Amino acid sequence: MKEIIKIIVDTIVGTRFWNKTFIVGGYVRDLIMEKESPDLDIVVALENGGNELAQFLYEKGISTKPVIFERFGTAIVNIDDHQIEFVMTRKEAYSPHSRKPDVASGSLEEDIQRRDFTINSLSMNINTGDISDLTGKGREDITDKIIRTVSDPEITLKEDPLRMLRAVRFAVQLNFEIEAQTQDGIKQQADQLTHISWERKRDELTKILLSGYPAQGIEMLKHLGLIKHLIPELEEIFSLPAENNDDLDVYSHSLKVMEQVRPYLSLRLAGLLHNIAKGTIPKEAEINFANFETQDALLIKQILKRLMFPNEVIKEVIFLVDNYTRLDSMENMETLSNTFVMGFIKEMRGNLDILFEFIQADKISHIPKYCKPDFIPVLKKRIDKIRKIFEGRTMPVKGVDIIEYFNISAGEKVGELLKKAENIWWERPEWTKELILKEIKL
Image: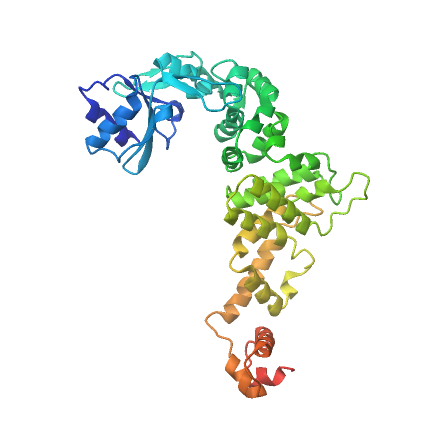
């Protein structure tokens, strides 16, 4: 980003944009924290200044043609494949029950006051590099690792309820804490999330799940009364007891599994939700958690569709939840038949690695009595051993061989017999075509 900043600075030397252009938000925060930042938001202290500077850079051949959002006085361009947002310094006013503010040109001070949190309220003069802390709390809160609203939490959060989720997101991304008054404001305004679209809520939830502290994020959402506006079904498993005398209750086990997998969205969602259907058991019923995978998958599909997750994500999460217990009954992986292992590999259609990662996370998230850290490693060794046997080899029996040997016509019967031939070959890979055909029973 430093190169892009230099390009902009060199281009506006001696123009009316000089000393009127400021970098704000995450870039300045990350600069104070000595971190690289992928974002660059720029405000221009001139009426319609953001749009005009973006257009000026385009005319100078510095950027792509700006995409203009007239209502918000905002323009977006690309410079060296980086998306940059330009906006005039502005003040905002919200109408009751509207999440879209009325925007007018304002001073830099007014622009800062409309921002969400003090850690995002610092501004840097793009020409001099001087950083201003107009709230008087930005630098201090970054040092103290505090999330605090710029203005009164009740007003700030009511104006844009998505800020409540952003507070949690920043807390888990930066490993900061939300200060008490802001927490109280979130609790009071939590129901305002009903005015926010599912897509915007999904985007914040995704960032929370992919952070370094996803379980802490879910716990914050629970504590602040926000989870019911994202995944209300989770509330039904908060009080479910431990399964099989495990040391963790169902909800805590789900959080632990989620934290055991890498920050990949489908894995994190599967970890969080793989026990979700257990909350549908009537309170007076005898608890039996067997065979709940199908119910989990059905409920998960409803949840993820409501949150507007892409179909490919939904499909992958359901695949994981549907299949992670498939091998539970296998006591000794070394004794599994070649036919079973090869059939399982084919059925998984190239998704073995992600499934094994999820199974491993589940297996190690129990007390020692039920913890099976060697389960997947042993299975992988068995699979590798079998794969080496068949590596570079082709099953010797073809459909035409079946047709000729049994003197039958092409059709479903040929496929059925070919499958039998394949099963025989998997168990006896040294057999020839002739031996396999003789072994097949019509």
